[in-house]
Length: 312
Image 1: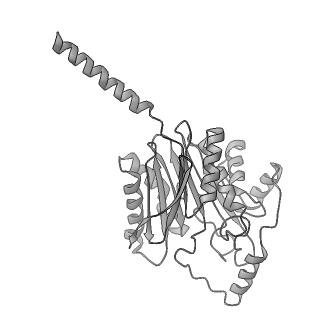
Image 2: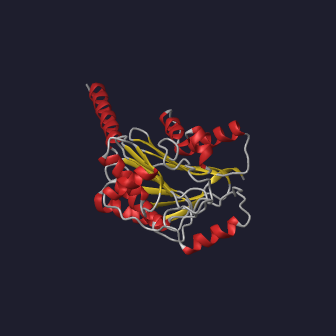
Image 3: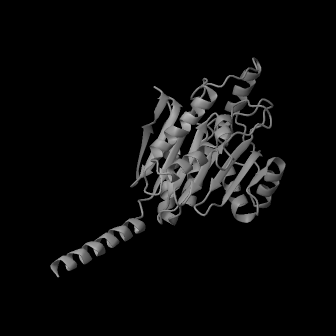
């Protein structure tokens, strides 16, 4: 009888432990590419207020979008070679819903237009004049986003008119964000004004679901920064989530996604960096070249962390 009681008790304890694991909800957390303390803090505060990861990543993107000193995001972003500030953004929630805008001009917060596309239309992506028309219909205000600082930089560039991608010039660029809300749900977002002095009409990975951002509430999420052409060619964020689905840690998944680029394209002088987070709240980061960092806010504490890289 003692043995039978012991086995029954052990079985019950095992079931209880399994149920506890299933019901485990990690602390809310938000991470972002590059040094974005104000953005992640704003996002974390929003999550504490509403409980929702989606609200957090949107609020986090608002900060650099409105900062005229961030020359590759939103207001103050460097224009294309024709003098137009064009914006790309995307957002994705834990249910698999997504919205994005490309080649959008004159709107301070493209991330919120992307969210409106997700929530108020049957589409995923709107572009150019159509995206602007939709934004104005939704009550967004049209503004001049080309600051004197960015205009001066463009005019100086025109004297030479030579485009050479520089590693880590995007240190304050494309903001990619991932968050876990109070219920443990995941969301992601990305916003950028793209390459400085790019060809008119160029769109990078930032509005591409599966490129710049991908979330799956069964697994986790990932986001990207850097030279978007190579993120698009390998669908980096989607790839990372699938690696995590196979059982890899966020760190290993990011490293494997970077190696996919390095091996396939025989590494050139450019930067790509990835962030990932799983449903346990574990996170990882990896880049091709050193110099990539990311920001995390958890328990109300914000810190900037240097990422490991392929080129050390």
